[in-house]
Structure formats: structure tokens, C-alpha cells
Image (cartoon, rainbow, N blue to C red; front, side):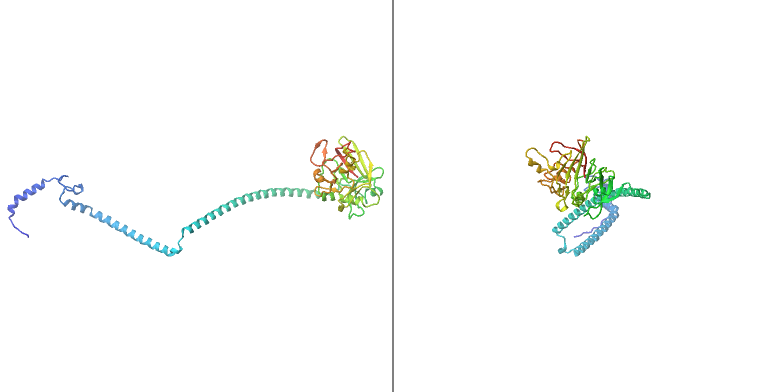
Length: 404
């Protein structure tokens, strides 16, 4: 029920004054305010302060709310975009095509292998770079050598423009051997061309012609150990070393040539071995009916008997003093020629390889004129003569040997 009553303002005058006075006298404190906030002013507990506060911050809050709404819209739009992108990716990679963990492991292994191959190729590249550097150095070295050779060629060409002078004097007389040349009137020792009956062409030899008109064909010469006598079968067959007009160089004439010379005539050949030791003592050993067989027979050495000589008969073998038959182990008559690469001796081993040169070996030898070369008592590089014994009583360390 509602009751409206009208009354006189006059009667209310004192009351309003009292209320106004009371309100004017009111002071806001924490005790009489239910909510005390300095931003609300002193209106507490009335709502006027709230209105003022709202009016004061309303515009700012509206702006902030609008900004938040804008950001939320952006987030929503971005979310939609991301969802569309996810849907697109899912459409490109359906579940049946998505990479499984096993596939990932497989790709990992393949990646490791690829990395290993890359490292391998890198190492190969480094190795090739080193090789290239070595080849470059070699190329530079070869270029330097080529330059030196070109300079040498230029010097030789300049020298060859001068008239050539043959310093090796070769005698004009020719024959089947040195005795044949001496029989034709030659009296000067030196270089001559001979052609034995079965020889296909002439070849050069040194003929030593004595005052009696004997022509000796020199088969071997050793003077100072300058020539290496450690040669193979072919080299001993063809010969090696150098022939000189004054007979001052070392050489081996060659087994094939010796064979052609010693088997061409029914007249027998004599072999002379001349020796000289470091004290100047000289000696000879002469053998009758000396022959050297063909290559098929391994250039077998044969002779009829020992003619004599101060050097003794080493070809007969060495007498050890135990049994006269001991000589058969080291005698040379009837022995085949041996080299380190063609062993034809009677020894279980290889005499030529053991002694370092070719010779008519047995087991092994009593005299070896192609052996290693000593100078005095010192061993030097090159070859030296083995012993040449006179029944075991005399041993020569040889300076000069000659087979004629």
C-alpha cells in the first residue's frame, strides 16, 4: 500500500536545516566508510564518488577495451589462418603418407652415410692435393733438368760443329784372329778387327804382338777394379767393358766371341794367363789346346794340359792335403760357365752368386780371375781377383791379369 501525504514545508523547515547541518558536519573516515578509496574522494559512503570515478576513467577503459577487442580479432584471424594452414598441410600429407619413426631413423642413417661419404671424399681430395703438389714439385724438377739438358745439347751442338777427331786408333790389318794378323805383317800391338770363320760379322779385339811375331788375342783385362764383373749370363756372352788402343781399360771380350775364335781352326790355341801382384811380382800360366764350347754346352772350358809358368796351375784344382782326389772339387778343366742367373756348377749352392761374378765354376774354384777386386789389403767397391794358387803354396792378390 502506498500512502502519499502532503504537508507544509514550513513545518519541515527546522528538520531540513537540522539534516543539512548534520551533513555538513559529516567527515569521512575509515570507520564510517564501508569502502574507503582515495580515488572516490570524500563522498563515501554515498555513490557520488563512484560516479565521478566512473566518469573519470570511462573513456580510458573504452579505449583499452577497443584495443583488446582489436587484438582478439587479430588472434582469431591468426588462429583461423593457422587452422587453414594445418588443414592444407594435412591435405598434402595424409596419414598414410606421414613419416613414421622408422622412416625417420632410416633418413638419419642415410644422412650419416652421406656425411661419412663427404668426409671420405674430403680426405680423398686432401690426398689428391698432396699428390698434385708432389707432381708439381716433380714437374718443376724435371723442367730444371730439361733446361740443363737443353743447355748441354746446345754445348754439344756447338762442339759438334767442329771437325770430329777420332782419338781411338784402329789398325787397318784384319784377319781371323790376332795370329793371322801378325802373320800378315802387323808388328804393332793395338786394336784390330777380326772375323773368325763362323762369325757373322767382324768385331774389335786388342792384339798383343810380341817381338817373336806371336799374335795374342786378349780375352780379359783387369787393372784397377774400375769395371764391374758382377754381370748376368747375356752380358758375359756378349762381353762388357771398354777396349782401348793402349790397353789401359778393363773388359771381358765375351764368351760367344771366345768360342768363335777357339773353335774355328784345326790348329790348337794356347791360353796364357799373366798375373802381377801389388808388390810388382809377375807370373804366367800357359795351357795347351784351349777351347770354349758353344752356348748350348754352356761355354764349357777345356784344355789338354798345363804347359808351365811361374804362377802355377790353379786350373788343376786345390790340394787340401787330405786326399789327392780333393783337387777334383776345384779343378776347372771341363767345367761349364756359370753366372748368378745361370748356375751350371757342381755345387749344391750357386758359386757365381756367392762370389759375385761369372767363371768356369766347379765346387767352387781354385782360381777365379773374374772375382771381387782388392786394392792391396783393402776391399773396395767393384771387383777383385780371387786367389790363383800353385798347389796351395802361393796366393796372389792380383793387380793385373790378362787372358790371351
